[in-house]
Length: 338
Ligand SMILES: NC(=O)c1ccc[n+]([C@@H]2O[C@H](COP(=O)([O-])OP(=O)(O)OC[C@H]3O[C@@H](n4cnc5c(N)ncnc54)[C@H](O)[C@@H]3O)[C@@H](O)[C@H]2O)c1
Image (tube, rainbow, N blue to C red):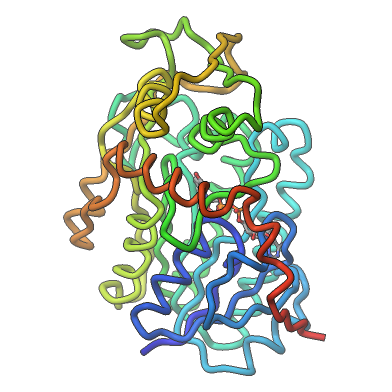
């Protein structure tokens, strides 16, 4: 059994990872400022400390209260349009605050670190199947912050003998029976389509229908959040030697926006109101991972990532939590580090 500090464990991907860690008997302490996360998303059995990763003193207190075996770092600002409009806030949150975290982790003598990076580091890809060594040329400050932290982590690895895994997620989606996606504002396609199905939205907007793809809409690689969590667990058990490893997490298969719309319609059993709109700046036509390195080196397989299963799981979660986590907050005890 290991003891893991999970930053951003009240967010979408982090909370699913916490629940998988707990299921396997690990001890989990979550550090989250609840800026975009929800106390109700933190699984029962995890301790939630409400604080920012930029608060070095509070972090030091948390890190010395337990003997941590590893840190899983999910906490970040992650809304791409906001990162284009307000890059300073992204460098502050995703880089400066992360350095405060790295320093606190170093001071506590912890040497295993797993970082949530992103396919956004690649920018407009030059290949239809992106591998980890392809050029990195982010087209928004969000991707730039992820690339910068990867680079910073390389220096920590060589100077302090850390074992680091950086995972570049493609499109995280889907839900478990207890944990699902509740971003505010929501910008991800599947929750937006499900909100259209329930009438919370009047229509779903397809942004760009003249891309050089078979049906004119963007192609993306959708990977179930449980499969993402699984990669983190494999990193914990497989990666032992000091050094930095970087992996894509995607399935190697892409689906167009129209295909996703059709699958959502099949799952919810209704026709959705869809409108065509112009392209969004910075949206590449195709983003699809080569997951070969992750499969070869960590033995990872995408077990839950067929599109129907993803959408079904998200729809089931939505039906159980029609107002997201809103209603679940009251029942939680939150401890503050101060
Ligand atoms: N969701 C995706 O499709 C996707 C794709 C690629 C990469 N990622 C990365 O995965 C990670 C998790 O993404 P998500 O979709 O779960 O986002 P999310 O917004 O749901 O979760 C982020 C969590 O971090 C917390 N947080 C933010 N800043 C903090 C700070 N300074 N101190 C403490 N806590 C803070 C938020 O409150 C939230 O709970 C992020 O690093 C994101 O960049 C996500």
